[in-house]
Image (tube, rainbow, N blue to C red; front, side, top):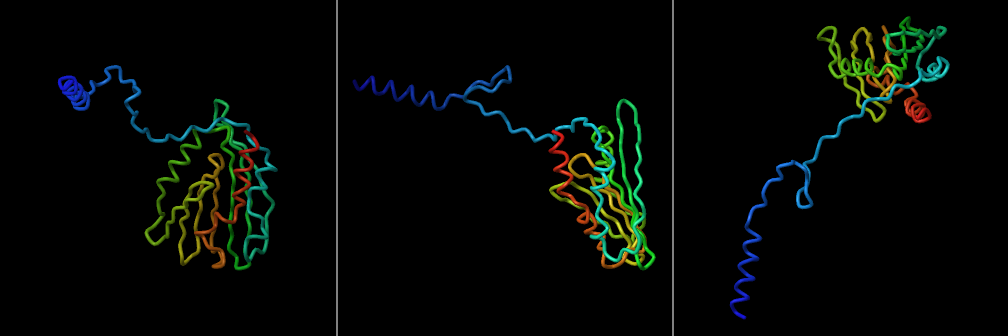
Length: 201
């Protein structure tokens, strides 16, 4: 009986100390946990562009922009890039009481996903036009972008991609101090962008 107990103890110690041979096939077994892989952003699916009147509703309402003296009529455009890639855009300009202006554009890249990736690369690598400009990166749940502006002349520009589909651009000069360049993106109705994408799924 004593010899049997010694044999069991020896087998137990051997099974605990022996190394498990590597899996030559590279396939995880029940005892192995596969290494964690970094999450990869899925490429956007090509979608039908939304109508121009729908895009127009994605521009900031003039009532939300301070010190506006005049709102010019909106315009729309269509760019065909080949292989079924089409970008629709709408733009509008407002003029301020101090003589300054702000031009804004929204473009739908739903039918041009590869071109959207190129825009994202530009946004991730922004640059100033000259050293005295202020540059700020924008990170929001709806998307990413940047704004660059001159605190003296109040000239600046905004560029952002929202809902992994829409490119927002804005440029202005002599913008009133009550319009903060770093918060310009917040004038756009951002929740509507994601709602529009969700409705098309």
